[in-house]
Length: 419
Image 1 (spheres, rainbow, N blue to C red):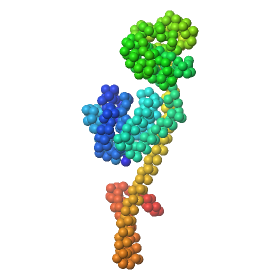
Image 2: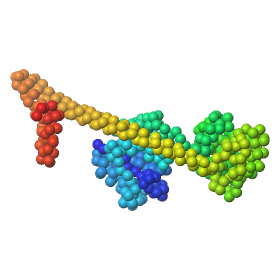
Image 3: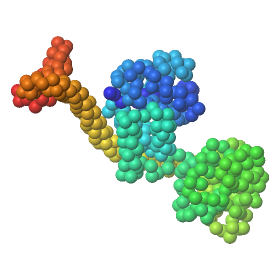
Image 4: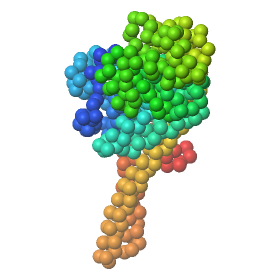
């Protein structure tokens, strides 16, 4: 039995291909059952995110299964099989174990060390369990990957530093305000970056949030998602005095917040400090605002410097993380081999038990018929020896005929015979 991880991600496929090779929650049950219907595949889990689509399998033969899966994915998503093959990676056995561990730990993500993928992997596993496509092998594999991800995050700094603009902006705010739950934030704009900023602020405990945008409807849509207030850009002068944190990201060609506006706000605030991040290019906040006391203004270039420093820190942590994964993978493969031996021993003993019961029944019938007990015992021993040795003997002869010269040595070891 082989382990198999096959898929595409942001490193191997463009977004137009990734969006085609995706699996929706509505079709997941059908997809999992369809994969299990492919030749030799025993178990399956499908992971589908914006940056990757992967299928994890337990299969009789990895090569046959991977070819079948590429053909299946191409057929399901109406793609040319060869074009799909060029951007598909295939990992088997030990490499598959290392790959899923790297995915779980965030080492294979677009943002190095990001934690969201672990939750997505757990969700994919739970869905596969719900639809009965997971057996003992993949259960063992996924539990291992979750354990490794936890060990990596506990023992390295892989997830400690901000590596996205939105996250860096929020992280910097904690240098000024230790407790964000007591702060009021004003977010200017309603695009994707501001959406992420709002999420990170909520995660840090911030409760009072106002969203300002050129169109009120868009501001309200975002505000409703985060239980926040909405206002227009023209309301910024009135909202600024209330704001401890101001983060802006609009497409305006002219500054929206000037030095005079901030000066008036500071007077009303009695010069309580204000943390401001201007993510926009062109800038939303006049550069002269940085000259004011009690204002801590950062631009997108400041954030990029922070992000680059943090990325280097994460890359150093990633080296330690990969060492952990390598060590844990070796232990997993060793444990998996032990599980395989245990399964084989169980099957061998079960088959021997069937032979034993059948021959014992014959012996009991012979005794009931009045046959000599000594001869019955001799015949029982003879039959048991022949029946138990027949399969191994035939297999050994066949192995030698097929050129497996080490088969005899292995057989001697199995039967504990000193050559």
